[in-house]
Length: 228
Picture 1: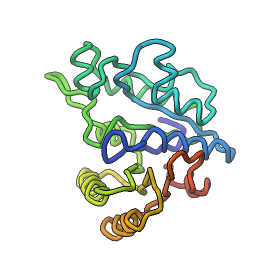
Picture 2: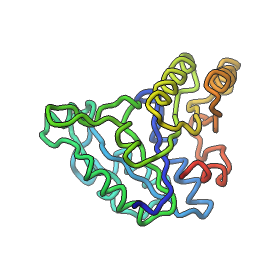
Picture 3: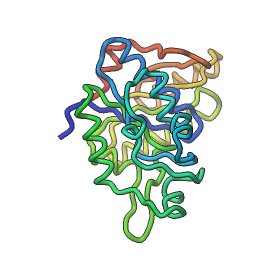
Picture 4: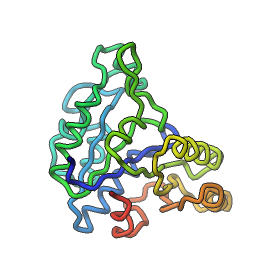
């Protein structure tokens, strides 16, 4: 069984800054003295070269968080086509195998005390969808018995996006430990979004991340307590 305490970072959709926030989370823990690592099952839209890996989500987290880790250990499946992993896998003939993801996660978990796993896109993103298997992010979360943090855009439309995502995750028996709002500018609307999200879901908004923030405004001990 994995030795590390784990946490899965998902999002309301793609392009809300999930990787950016994930990097700040791992960075915060490491700077506070926690032995923290990172893992991602699948990346798409990426050249399978050293330069491509360095420019990837995994490469970004490695750089920001100061991880001394080979990039090949941070992500298992790499696809060149810039589409959902399930479609890229169909196009490239390299479908995600859940046992391989579990093994890679376990390998990473053996090195760290706190392991952050980043998802791909939103919670409903399919990793594999073919005649042999159908694998969604929720299947990985359940298989690894991980709690989650939900990243969302702080702006207009986020109440609907967060509430619907949380309700789906609850329906699927996935624990949501908190919400992090990215691209926060401090407007009245964004502050109201925070209040409404907490009232409608009963889940705390853990942090408000401003544009170009270099750290997350969340105490390291409280952050570490999210991992289980």
